[in-house]
Structure formats: structure tokens, C-alpha cells
Amino acid sequence: MGQAGFLQVPGARIYYEVEGSGPPVVMIHAGVADLRMWDHQVAALRDSCRVIRYDTRGFGHTGSESVEFSNRDDLAALLDHLGEERVHLVGASRGGSIALDFTIERPERVITLTIAAGGISGYQPPVQGPKEFWERGDELYEAREWERLADLESRYWADGPGQPRDRVPEVRRAVRSWLLSNYRAEKETGWPVPLDPPAADRLHEIRVPLLVLLGTLDDVGTVASMRHLAASVPGARLEELPTAHMINMEQPERFNALLLGHISAHP
Image (cartoon, rainbow, N blue to C red):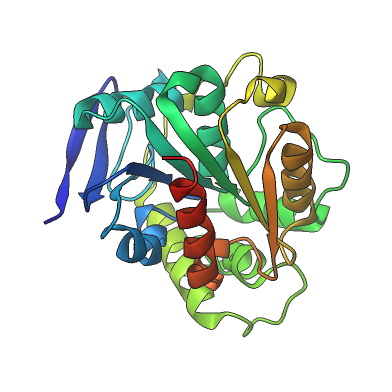
């Protein structure tokens, strides 16, 4: 029997869902999605794990007041609310950056860490994606042309830069719908307080077992960041899959197998 609800934190109400029983696994969504991106993982893990997922501020069912806040504090508050002292932590894209920062700030609360196509706060990869993509995205955002912006971003992140538009149509449609829904809502997102010093200067502090996943068809900056992360943390395991940014949606069976193996190896 699943559980869903809202947690009141300073300046926001965090929406969360919990399914299954067993070792606690917390999943943090990408910046182009909401907690629904983890549907395949919840279905695969809930028979053996307690799967916790939530919408971060400004996404899905979670709003925010115009206040400064810490994504790490929000996550810690959710764990406290659910009675979880230590968890297996999973993050994708922006969610990966949040998970990485949380692990550095609160290592005692993390059993294992899995980062998929994530970022490293404070790190500038030696290669970057096409400048035109970012500039065009900024233009469309300023003009509030949400349909065109959702088209642009879903093609880049779901199909992959330079890939055929019909490569993964179901994934692209899902990502586009989440982007469009979020942009149209025009929610207040608040002002996240960054980790200080940032993760880029503190990767040597990570002691928990780390699994890093990257898609070889992804944005080149993301690929470089994930390779740097895996090379900088002793004992980290790097897995490269033939996908774009949404690894868990493109290859859910492979993703689930790698994640379950990582969790079961570190009870």
C-alpha cells in the first residue's frame, strides 16, 4: 500500500510518495521532469525496497515561496518526517547534483550514492554543449514561449544532441509534457542556497559507495562531468550506456539491474 502526502517546510510544502518496504531508497528527479520519471524504478524496486520520491521546489506538486532555502535541508526534513536515518540515495541530472551535495554535507545519512547524468556543483567541464542551444533556450524563456521551449529542451535531453527526432519518441513525449506542464504553471521556485565550498572542491570527502551512470549520447558537458566524478572518488564504479540524458527511462531494465546490484552489495 503506497503513501503520499505533503510535508510543510519553511517556505514550501514538499509533495512525496512512498511505496514498498525494505531498505530505504530515495530518488531525486531531473530538472526536466518531476517524480513521475521514476515510475519504472518504483515498479521494479517496491517489492524489495522502501522507495521514496518527491517533487523538489517548483516542480510537480511542490511550490515554494520567494525565499532562500537549501535543497539539502528539504531532503533532510523529508527523511526525518519519514523516520529514515540513513538511505540509499539516487539522483538524476539536477537531482544528481542535489544528491551529491547532500552526501558531502550529511555523509552519515547516506548508505550508497547513485548519480545518473548528473552535475557537480562548482565544476566547469572542459567541453560544453552547443552555445546556440543555451542561448535559444534563454530567448524562449524570456519570451515565455513555453511550447517552443519544451520542444527545444525535450529534443536535446530526451533524443540527445544531434540525434534523430524519432529515436526515443515515448521518452521525448513524456519529457515534453513534464516541461510544458511545469513552465505553464509558472511557479515560484525560491532561491536555493548553494553548497559552500561546492562539491567540485570536496569530492575527496566522499566515502560512501558510489555508482556513476552516463549516457554516451548525452550532452558532452554532462558526460565529461560524470567521468570526472568517477575518476575523482576512490572506488567509484562508472557505467556507460548507449542513451541520452534520461538513462533510467531509455534503458529501465539495465538501470534497475545496476541500481539493485549496487544497493544489495552494500546493505
